Amino acid sequence: MAASKLARPKGADEYRKITIHRYQPVDVLGGVLGILNFDAPRISDLIKQGFDDAVNHDCTANRCTLS
Image (cartoon, rainbow, N blue to C red; front, side):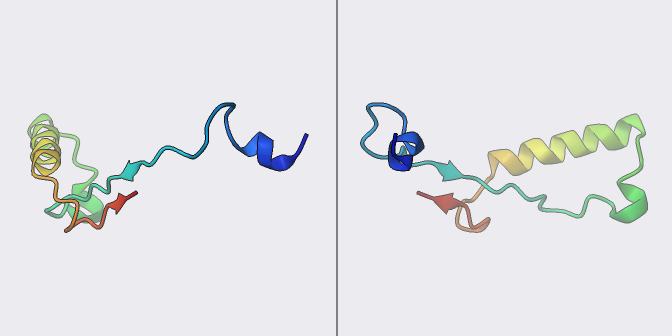
């Protein structure tokens, strides 16, 4: 069997295009010591920040790979 046949799923004429999103925190996560702060209010703030960053995601600003 040829290697070209192994590289593609059976019945697929071409590969499906995908988008790779790059998520980066808008604000600093707290530096070397701040990131090790596991207090409940700090963790809650980080979760909220992550949610807000995801909701306001901008593919152009984050240089996402659009295929």
